[in-house]
Length: 323
Image 1 (cartoon, rainbow, N blue to C red):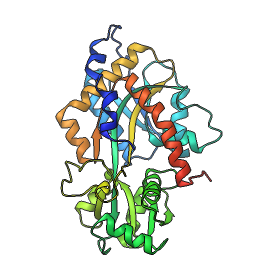
Image 2: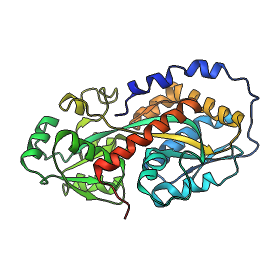
Image 3: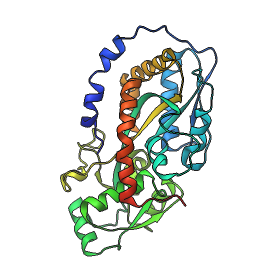
Image 4: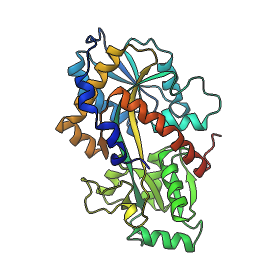
């Protein structure tokens, strides 16, 4: 599974890759658009706005977030894939839009590798195993024991087939040899609302979507899917402490249209990576439940290609299909 440790070989060469730049510096001549394929206020949108704000000064032009929703993010991705490769229209993509959808949709009008120029891996997103406070479980081992003894009795909320909630739950079921009754919702927020009301039992929720409900006491976090404990939640155990080997993370990154000239790609990569190193940006990302990364374009391209077979296997394990 994806962890910061598994990224180390890709990120180790980061300083030398930046130092080796020899191409001319490109400067945008008008505002830049960051397209997001999901509604305002969601996790991808929130991250896009953090990144846009963080690089606006360095780019010398406003970076504006534009939401083009629909088809699990495919509408925004296709728009950018067909846009002029001039550095003024990019997409903030995710594991879902630029890996999962390639395995789920049979007739996509674009290719997630061929039609994009990776810019930078922005962040990793772990999940919380979130319960209603009335649930008796205090450790993952207790949840597993109950689920094994009562197959299908626990209702698990997911934000649709192929969502991070679906994959995190399905890979947990596979690793722990348990079975939940999965209940699908139109997004992560409705699933969390049903969890807070006590109408479902558990959600494997991205931290950004659950953290405020946890802090407010409406839901209880049982564990986190990171390989190591979170600096923001140091007292919260990892799933792997009771289920060795289990981790889950999704990711977010920025893509330009294929054919975007190298000076443009390198300028954005440099600005985003520098922003992700700034303490105030890292703190903001951590508050949202993300682990800030920042990478070169080459590192991100290598990373994305490695993700495609991993995500295809998760689709197989989960049984996700597009209706």
